[in-house]
Amino acid sequence: MPRAELTPRVAIDAAAKEIISLLQRDGRMSYAEIGKRVSLSEAAVRQRVSKLTDAGVMQIVAVTDPSQLGFYRQAMIG
Image (cartoon, rainbow, N blue to C red; front, side):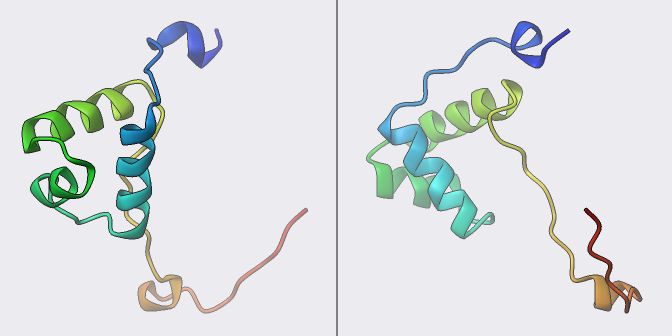
């Protein structure tokens, strides 16, 4: 079953796009700081982020440095 059928659609307006952009630049930015930048309350930002993640529009992930984890070789496949 396609993911679109499993999750509800979320409106991606200008504020949602800006929230996503800010989190892409700094994933640790507080909801309060994001709210200041997009003219929304902290609670509104928190709700929007929750809806975006629940709908699969975005994910919160950790990006690691493989060499810091003991992986010293890289391979390009494909």
